[in-house]
Amino acid sequence: MPILVRTEDPAFSRMLIGRYGGFVNECGSPVFELDTDVVSAGKASDDEDDLRVRLEGGCWILERGDFHAECDFKRRRGRIRLAATPWAIDAVLRILHSLLLAQQGGLLVHAASAVRNGSAFLFAGISGAGKTTISRLAPADATLLTDEISYVRDGLAWGTPFSGELAEPGANTQAPLRAIYLLSKGPENRIEPVSAAEAVRVLLECILFFAHDGELVGKVFDSACELAARVPVRRLFFVPDARVWDLVC
Amino acid sequence: MLSRLYIAHASDIAARMLGGEMMIMSPRDSTLFTLNETASAIWQAADGATPLEEIVERHICAAFDVEPDAALRDARDLVEQLASHGVLLISEAPIP
Image (cartoon, rainbow over all chains, first blue to last red; front, side):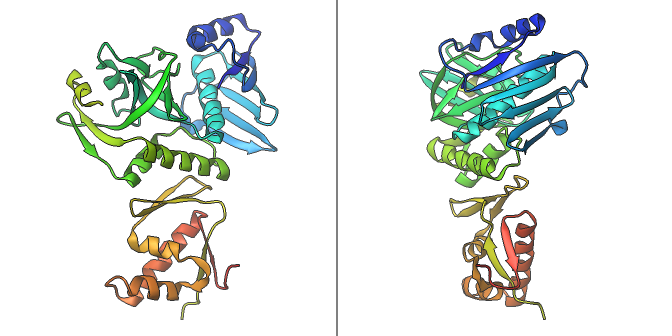
């Protein structure tokens, strides 16, 4: 879902190109257009606890110390005032994508993901679960989609520019999602089955969603249930050892 | 003597039965509830017309080895908790 970001600030424009250049969609018409006002001042923040997302008079308001965005989903246009940092624009784009995706049955998930032999695999977990570690252990024939935020829609996993500790954007590609692994560090590499309810419970903990809106909450819940019903979900215990990838199939 | 309670699902909740467990998400605060077998039985019988006492008698006491007063106490705690998160409506009169 292409989002058009407009800026008149050359330095900010260069930062956008450097950060998201691999994900430019030249031919698609944007699903949303954002005008930006870059300000030098602003409280630096990447703390999600400080984030407020609310629907006000038909407009989504996204606020944090380092940005304020007003997004009109009917007109598909928005305006952001933000600090010229990668964290501010990254956060706005993640939230905007999570809202747009939720309406269409898609999800942004705290998960690393990779493509191997034509199939995508998701490794979901909250901070510290090992998303970057499993990404670093990936074999040479795996294509990393992200080590931090995975994009799931229509049975496919897509690469994202949203990175974690690897600090590298994922590959701009997609593949059918074959399995989801819930990451847990353990004394050995092993896979355990999880119940349908447990799969949904953990997936919901990992889904990026910030808006307390009844309709969208219901859609995200339904999408998580459908994802868990459609794709096998297993618990993956692992040690920092590349052989863990022998279990991924 | 405690008054009769009637219970009904809130209109905009997200709920689904998965592998024998009822999962309910509050639209108000995104709290996720996973109900066990007895709580699921109460949830499924919450039609707004049947008093909670009768639900407990019919669906809990008749099916599980449980003392009626304790079952009703637990049921009241459950429905009050669910109501506080906006997923269940409670009323002393039938809920249309």
